[in-house]
Amino acid sequence: MNSSLRQLPKVQTLMDSADAARLIDVFGRADVTEAVRGKIEHARNKLLADAPMPEAILSERLFWTDISETLDQLREQSLKRVINATGIVIHTNLGRAPLAQEAIAAMSGIAKTYSTLEFDLDSGKRGSRHSHAEAIICELTGAEAALVVNNCAGAILTVLSALANGREVVASRGELVEIGGSFRMPDVIVQSGATLKEIGTTNKTHPEDYADAISESTALLLKSHTSNYAVVGFSTSPTRESLSEIAKTHSLPLIEDLGSGVLVDLTPHGLPNEPVVKDVIAAGVNVVTFSGDKLLGGPQAGIIAGRKDLIDRIKRHPMARAVRLDKLSLAALIATLELYRAPNDPIARIPVLRKISEPIDLIRARAERLAERCGSIIDLNAVVVPSKARAGGGSLPLQDLPSFALSLTHKNMSPDQMAERLRGAKIPVIGRISKDKLLLDLRTVGDEELTDLSSMLVTALSS
Ligand SMILES: *Cc1c(COP(=O)(O)O)cnc(C)c1O
Image (cartoon, rainbow, N blue to C red; front, side, top):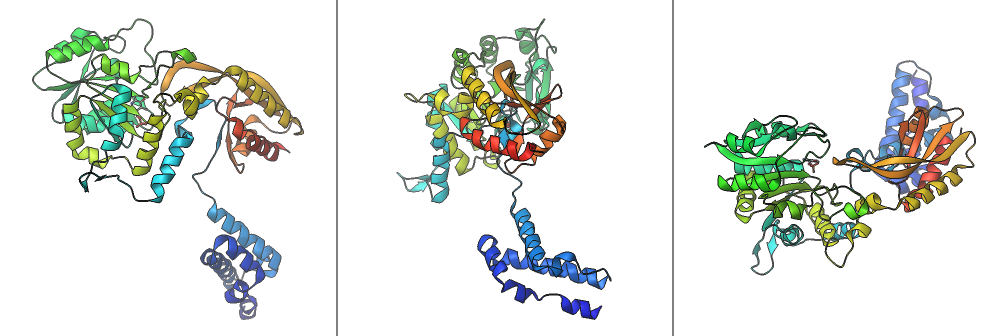
C-alpha cells in the first residue's frame, strides 16, 4: 500500500509543468492548485481504502483533461444568458425586460465611479436618492411627486405601511389578485399592519359597496389592476372617477396598484387598452404603484407616484429605506424613462415595446431564415407555423400577439428530449412544447440572436 502511495505525483511537481502553466493563465493559480490538490487527495483516499490507483492519475493526458473539466465546471455560472424562444415577451422566470442600450450604458457609467447618489452638489450636503428620478416620473405621469423602490411588491407594501398601518383598507373581492412568486394582495395588506375590509363579490362590486364600507377606521380605498386575469361576462366594477368622488367625499386617499403600468398608449400597435398611468392619475387616483421591468421595459423597480403630501409621508416611512432602489437600477430606470421623452420613440428604442409591436412579416421572415439554417440537421423536420405569443409578466392577459414559430420534430428524439438538449446547450434555448411539437417562437428572439440560435440547434439536435 505504501509503495502505491509513493507513486502519487507531488502537487508541486505537477504545478511546475507546462500543462499547469496553460491552465493557470486561464483560471488563476489558486483554483488550479486547489483542483490538482483535490484530485491527488481523492487518489490518496482511494489507495488508503485499498482501491486501485485511479486511471486519471496514471496518464498525464487524462489527468490534465480531468482538471480542465473540473475548472470549467467551477467557472460555469448558474445565472447566465438564455435565448427566449417561448414567445412570452416579459417572462418573469427569464428575467423580464432586456434593457435598452441607453440603460445599459447608464448603468455601466455609474458602476465605474462615485456618483451624486445621495449628494447635493449645490449645498455640498447630503441629498436624496429619490430626487433623481422624481422629475421625469412626474413629467411622464402628471403626478405631483414620486419615489422609486426595489420592485412593485415593495412599492405596495411601503404605501400601505405608511398610509394604512393599524387601520382598514377597503378593497373589492374581484381584485384580490395573486401574482407569481406567492404574492397575494390580502397577505400584503396584513403584512403592512392594516386590516383588509373586503367588499362586493367576485364578479360585481358597486360604488355603494365602497361607500357603505367606510368607517372611522378606514385608512384608504385600494384598487388593483387585475393584471394576470380578467373577470368577464356578468361583471361590473366602479369607474375610477366614481371611486375618486367617494374617496374625496370622505377625505380618504384612493390608491391603485397598476402592476404593469404603461406610460404610452399601446392601442395603435394593436394592443388593447392597458390603463396608461397618466390617465389613471388624471381620473383622480391619488397614488399609483407600478413595475419598472414589465411593460415599461426598464430594470426591476417599483414606482410610486401621486399626490405630494401622501408621497412625502411614504418617503419618510422606514419601509421606504428598507426597500430602496440600488444605484445601478436607478441609473437604468432614469435612462429608460428618458426614452419616453420626445423626440425619442419609445416603441422603437425599448426592447420590450419593440418586440411586442414588431410587424408579423418581419417575424415570419426570421422564422424562415432559421428554418433554412436548420435544413442541414439530419433527421430534424423544421417547419414555419403561425403561433401565438404573449406580452407576459401579468400584462395584457387576454391578448395573444400574432407570431410565427419554428415547429420541430425529430426522427430519434421526442419533443421533451429536444427541449432538454436545448436547455443543456452552451447558450440554453428555451422553447415550448405544444401538440407533440417543440415550438421556437420568433417574436421573442432578436435578429441579432439568430446566428447563436441556429448554431445551438445544430450542436444540440444533430444525433
Ligand atoms: C407584477 C405585479 C405586481 C408586482 O410587481 P413586481 O415588480 O414584480 O414586484 C404587483 N401587482 C400587480 C397587479 C402586478 O401585476
